[in-house]
Length: 209
Figure 1 (tube, rainbow, N blue to C red):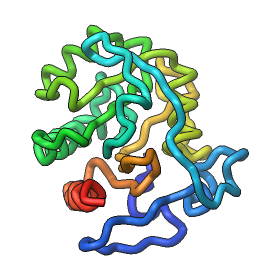
Figure 2: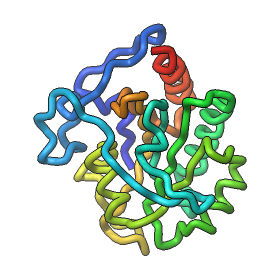
Figure 3: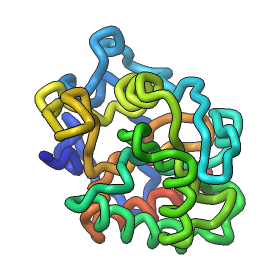
């Protein structure tokens, strides 16, 4: 899987002392943006969603409104990039363990395997803090729709056969940073500690806004 990372944007800046700008579809690589949203120059926000977490709770947009959060797509049986991403996400959780206005949302790409029970075991293995780090499962079509139309996490060229999961399979190494107003503020390579350091720094700056 090709990293989007720092190359994701058409124009990039690295200002560690300044919170990152809001990103809209028009700012992103058009290959990752749903056709109907390509010309959105401002105002894009994460839309409504509703999935089940590892504690059998329904988690939706209402649960992260007014909070800063990080989103990722993964699957529990992944043995390639996911272990590195999970290690880095544990670093993110540790950095904000006492911050009440910060959340982590890990959406599965393989809900057929990643049941609530499986997600619970996985959350425990990764020391997820209840109410802080949500492992979300549910309807596959809705999970994928959120990835494509809200978070812009898939290039068309990156749709490939992934064995039993099928050909329509989302799997990237990117973490997405979302602000209190449900706006995208950055993409970071979740396998790269330096980029995750930047994510942590950017999130701290956004929390001060």
